[in-house]
Image 1 (spheres, helix red, strand yellow):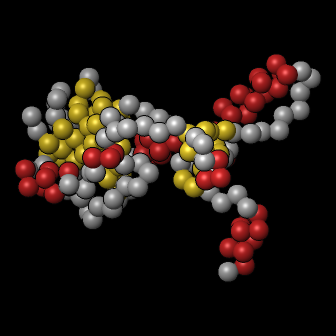
Image 2: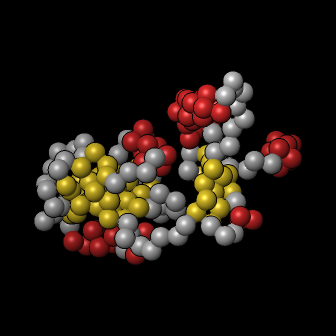
Image 3: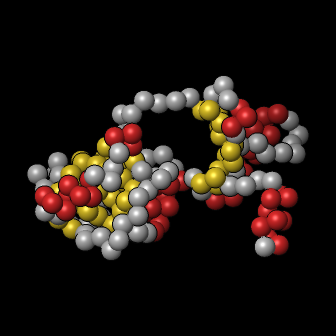
Length: 169
């Protein structure tokens, strides 16, 4: 079993940040079935996994708070390099870590002739606009006061007064 650091392109990294995925396509030659892989993009380490059927199946995801990497050496890693980089991956990032319930909503005002038509238009808007334009409102279950808006997987300020204050600075 070998150890690897693979850098994915910006488009794949954005897909991983926007949509839940169990794996990442393996687009570089070298890693074989069962090899261990660290995943990087845009100067950060965002995951760890194992090669399975031509993909890297996540064992850990660091998409919310990825640690920075200084000019990472890509490709096969020796034991010392693997150990140093793997130390950046906390156990709490494991895909088997305990889960918490969250309430997630995407409210959209829809003009329609019927409730069923409104539902169809809602899903059309969600598909068309997607996570780049529609904020998803997320709060821990039972703690709705902690609700935050997320766009592209990152907290997004939705208060127009806050945005005006930032523009004036």
